[in-house]
Image (cartoon, rainbow, N blue to C red; front, side, top):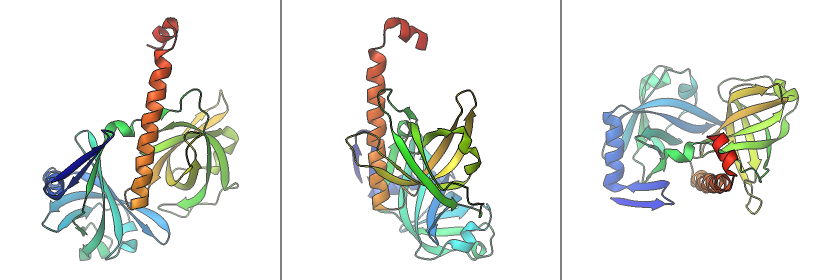
Length: 269
């Protein structure tokens, strides 16, 4: 078993530690999300972990439509994430077998190659951290279609907003309320932002999960979930950058709170 930690937020499991973790997840019938690319678009499928064998992991797909039956194939690279205790566990794998019922659009089993490594990420990293008050981060994002259906192309396909907060799982972007008709739940975006002025830009893809209007300030807040970070070396490197940025935001916010005047601190409490 090989275990190492990085900034106390990621634990890497290999060998017997990896097998024990996935076996425990199977024992508890843990549900998770499997993600893969098909025809240039991200596909997400809810799954239940059934068994961890010597060289394979067996998962069962929930009947959430025909996404999996139409798109998944043998040798398909996939990423899978599930929650265990106070961590989110992610790994990449490859499809090595399919239950015939999957091909008929029914609930079915998918056989995955046993991953080489599982990353356990502290749940704290998925808690949103506000952008520090002295930092302003512009977000450029553009329309990339929809995950599950073909939607109407918005009038505008490219926007600029401001980052409100960030986590390892996603971000919230603030734009003008007049852009409301450009967005709908399920929409997929390409996203680019530079979280700190001295860093290189982060380029990612995400799915719109929430919309919140603020009519008083005439703004619209978009809650976006990152896509595909579990499926490749590049994606996990991006995840590592996000973890470091979230931790930096946390540190700056704590430092800012510590220097607030006592009257202001008591008001915040």
